Amino acid sequence: MAENDSLSEYLASAVEAAQKAGEIIRKGFYQTKHVEHKGQVDLVTETDKACEDLIFSHLRKLYPTHKFIGEETTAACGATELTDEPTWLVDPLDGTTNFVHGFPFVCVSIGLTIGKVPTVGVVYNPILNELFTGILGKGAFLNGNPIKVSTQTELISSLLATEAGTKRDKKTIDVCTQRINNLLFKVRSLRMSGSCALNLCGIACGRLDVFFEIGFGGPWDVAGGVVIAREAGGLVFDPSGAEFDITAQRVAASNPFLKDAFAEVTSPTLLWPKAAPKY
Image (tube, rainbow, N blue to C red; front, side, top):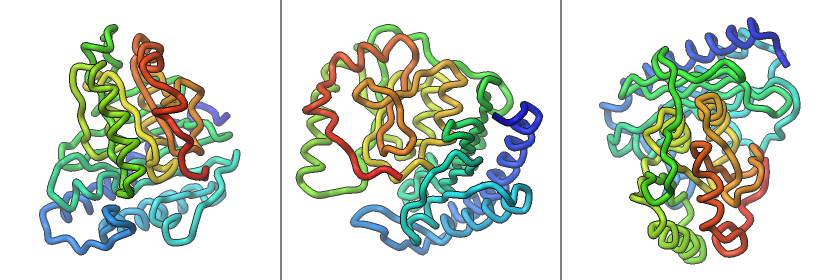
């Protein structure tokens, strides 16, 4: 593991890159978007690509020996293996559909893994001007102020977040709606904000009590938010209740009081089928 001084330096570099990319997002948010389709409902814009290029260029100059995995480069070139080497995992614009529609839940997500362990995390929403940061063992912060997960102990009084994903085949939709139908009887209410990274940060700052998502794009969606959620006192795990695997497209997070209750009301065989291939 890198020394603490190095980790603080990595965080500062990631914050600078996120803020520069955020300027591009903020400018593009109020302009006409040029949209391409990666799937039936999965979108990409010129802003996604410009932000990833900027972030990679910024960090590569500082850390030329590090590895880099980004959503847009992976989409263009195919899956990239996550190794034990220091690796920057970047979602340059998480919430592209929100961005296209002018819905202000969009962010830059930057995570650094060392030995495949999420170690440094930055999630920046430039529209709401919210900067979430975290370093392994050093706590989590929102705009420089410490944050903690909620203290909710009852699942029935909890606010749950999830996402419907980007696949629209009947089998996927049926499984997704079945999960939601089952869980709606067990929680106070449900939110779909359109950003995996911001949902993890919502757990970190206590806005959300439980979150899960299955079938998101890849480890770049979660690497930054996982650090922040854990450092705020949250638990990150597989939606079945098993151990979290950053290379699988499955994640759940909660405060420490709700994990077991959440796992108890879900069926590993019916509600949580195996997801897409690992990265």
